Image (tube, rainbow, N blue to C red; front, side):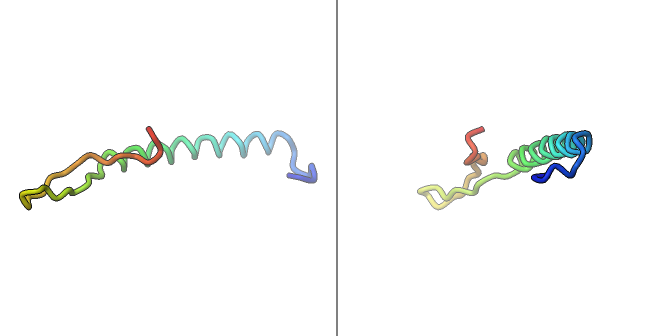
Length: 58
């Protein structure tokens, strides 16, 4: 790529494929985050579940 040996059409195709893969990965990550719960110990010794909080700020 850096040396200009790859045709522009091929580069655009690779970019589009990468964009599609990114969207798929983000959707799968979001789905996984919705399934994750955090177990929290209460003061009385019982346990409760809390929703997963994303570090990404979503």
